[in-house]
Length: 166
Image (cartoon, rainbow, N blue to C red):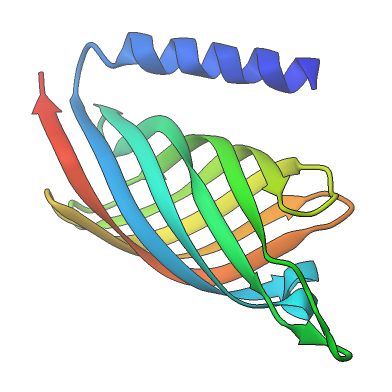
């Protein structure tokens, strides 16, 4: 955990020093998904919110920070209702833009699991999508690598609340 904390602090420091140039975006959005993996056995669907801050500092590349919340709705298993649970990511955002409108990327960091007695773990969320000045529409796979490893496949949309070019 100490290594992860150190890496995250270094990434945050790098991200904010790079914010002095390029275009910066505050992205707020929503997503929906179908639970898979360990979550597929206990959840019927997932809904969530996203908060991201991205810097486009280099040609075709974006870096930043990502967080949010994914809520997994429990389902009935063998006559028993399973509790809802959630994932709260604390992650770095990495994006590659091969064209102005298309992107590939991933959010990588630590995923906190809430609502159940489970440890968090390595968080990953690869994305592919369409981008313009105001909106991002994307498909994703989200997961946490831990003893209890919830995951989902879904779609989402982000609105670029603030855009500032320097």
